[in-house]
Image (cartoon, rainbow, N blue to C red):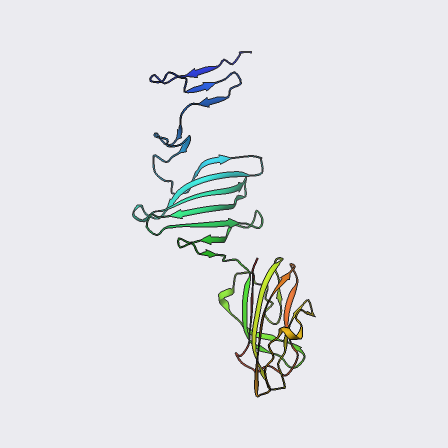
Amino acid sequence: MSTVKAINLQHPSSANSNIVFDNSGNASVTGRVGIGNSSPQTSLHIGLDKGFSSNGSSRFTLTPSQKATMHITAGTNGSSASNTYQYGVTLQVPSWGTQAGMIIAENGSDGTAIGFYTSINYADPPKLGLSVDPGGRINTPLQPAFRVHNGSAGSGAIISFASADTAFNGRNSGWNGSNKYTAPVAGVYWFGFAALINGGNYGRILFQINGSAATSYGDTLIGTIGSYISVSNAQCFYLNAGDYIQLYNEQAALYSGNYSSFSGYLVG
């Protein structure tokens, strides 16, 4: 069996060895290393001398286990006249593809944006969960949220709503289409409502969580005696996944039509 000997490689203009291979096969480099870059600017400079790849191919790969691989990628979208350069760190699983990642995109004129992607399981393609636009504004396009209106309820009944805002579709809101919102995940939620009561001595609408009152009488705005009474309230509640919230109308019936609304969203 042959013995591995140490090897020193020296640049003609240098007095020291630039690349050293020791007896164990380990290599050390004095100076900078360029991969795909003939003029490295840092200790390790992975460059793109031949231009960006149109498919965002991997430039650096880490495989800590057989289950997952992390890739640092770079690529372009669009024509050469209006390229959007994309850089990213993604987690990939063999045969399942990309499962999560962070993508940074810029085109040199409209600034830089960042997107964070996650997936529920291997069969679920990554979805954009949080983005930061060039102006620094944060958007969470999948954050659970809902808004419904056109409510109706008699005295001592749960309020039902006939219409839901389609702008909230696709957020996995948890609204059952009638009178109940079910939390898809645990967290702090904000809820608010406004309604018009059709007569009576006062108006009182209570939040109910899992069928039990969640607010005391003093938490609800009480109107004065008159033909119509305006009632509104807003609260934050912690809900476990599967908890549901409803609105209970204690007094006179709601005024029919689009004079009532109920909305909410996950704070975090």
